[in-house]
Picture 1: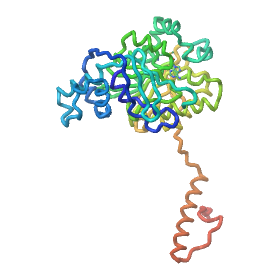
Picture 2: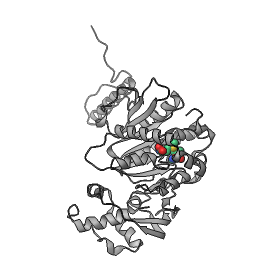
Picture 3: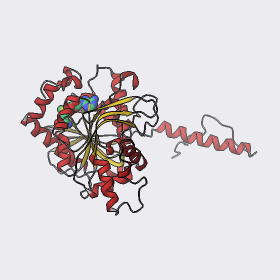
Picture 4: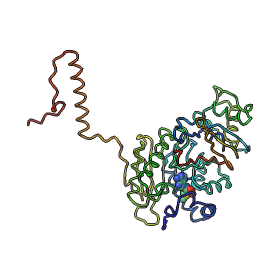
Length: 124
Length: 271
Ligand SMILES: C[S@@+](CC[C@H](N)C(=O)[O-])C[C@H]1O[C@@H](n2cnc3c(N)ncnc32)[C@H](O)[C@@H]1O
């Protein structure tokens, strides 16, 4: 699971959960894999990214130094920043670990890179 | 689909490791899925010059998603079968996939996606224990959370295998209840083997009237919007408004005629 996905995921489908965002991360295995950078797309998704959530996720994974804590004002043209952002969103993959609902603590396991968001019947 | 696999059991059991491999390596299946995905993509009417973030619902092993990828877009996929998703991971698809039961809702924050496709998955949602109440609830949860997770001028295109007209009705009504506009579109309606049914829905009306580029299709049914104003309701609204106004004037001490059952009614035409 890439951090772009983490930035979109919520646990609001759980009964009684209002926002369910952001999900906390517990990591067991990480992998870095190079992905071609698509600048157009990157710039287009920035407004949809919750930047503080992305930064906190990087911190949790131990990569706080690889991303500025705040989004620069010239983010659309700042190449150095865009490179770092691309790396953070697309190149770091959580292979095994857990996602945790911020309101209930419910664990969603990540196995082989695939988060399991299935709910039990009594949770919907 | 001669014998409907949805009748054989729940999808997460039907698409087990064996079936998932068979499915993904069958060249006939690959060919059909790709062609339907291409068509669904066409019907999404995405802006030509923009790379989009798309959702593939019931993405399976990623055949449909790979079409989105080939068109230069980025996608996330959800599916209820871990066997299908595992094959996808090993085929190195770009998008991330997640185990999600669409009947439990879309686990994404609002306005995340520019569009969604779903190829040969929606009919599965209609086959749970034949319990009408559960079915309606799951469809409602699915469509309302999908609506929320799409951007404000997005489309979702579903190719599916409806079992009968009743099922089409149940699905389109649920989509309408969730706020979607759009309808059912059928390619090659007169051919038994080539006929393909699509549900094309959108989050805003401004995008209705697409230029469907093919000759061999019919649009059978357009979703009607929910707010139908009926006559008695209009009369009631008008009456309430008048009664309120009279009440206000009465409080101000003005002379007001007494209320009666005729208040707010239209006068009969005299001529
Ligand atoms: C015929 S396959 C199509 C897969 C892929 N879209 C393709 O074109 O190759 C149908 C898929 O729908 C999935 N599915 C069925 N019910 C589902 C549900 N409730 N939620 C999510 N996925 C579901 C199945 O697991 C299966 O992978």
